[in-house]
Amino acid sequence: MNEQTTLQHSTSASANNRFKSSFSSWFWGSTIAATAAHFGFFAYLEFGEPPDMSVSVEDPMIIVPPLVDPPPPAPEPIVRPATPVVATAEIDEDITIAPVTFEENPVGELPLPPGEVVADISSAPGFTPRTVEPAYINAGEVRRALEREYPPLLRDAGIGGTVKVWFFIDENGVVQNQLVMESSGHEALDAAALRVAPVFKFTPALNRDQAVPVWVALPITFRAK
Image (tube, rainbow, N blue to C red; front, side, top):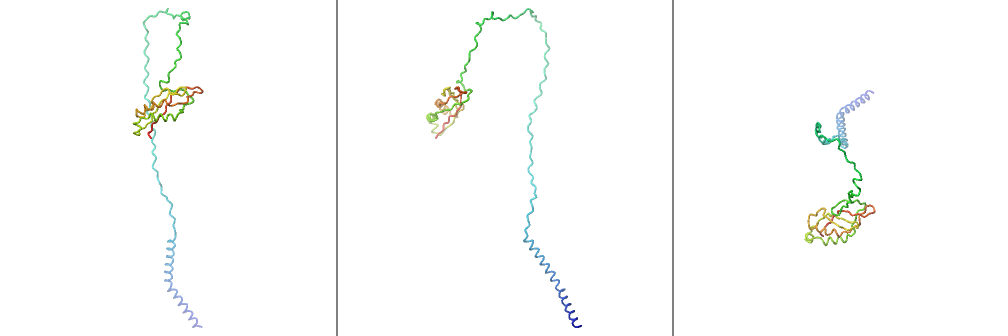
């Protein structure tokens, strides 16, 4: 019995000693394994980027006050009226105005009233009241006149231009007068435009239902092909 107890005691002592002797290796091994596991975990762990907390400052707005007109100058002081002076001339108190009667001024001798003055609106551009504008109706004939009147020297040189022309159109739509309103810069083109202007034919301008003569301005363009 004592030998068996002694054997068990010696066996337990040797196992305890073996555990104590291996404690250091188990401790450091587990510590190294835990450290490696943590490093591996953080190596594969994705961290989100922090939000952008930067502050942007816009350029300051400069407000320029509006310009204010200077105040008007002060009014000039009022001049006192001159002191009235009593005239020394003597006036006859018996002066009277003769009565005006038809006997003294017969009706037959009165001047005639002025007659109605009719202005000649064809002499210079002016405005005529109208409700319907005139429109030219012979585009083909005008085109042929432009080709015919185009100065050959300017056409061959490729020089063109636009002349703005005043047209005076009568009650029948016929051009009765023409004037250069804006020059093309070439006298030859201006003269050619005035030769082309009478070729235009228009519908009459109307003021309500009555045909009226009018001045209108239209461009005449010479363009080299």
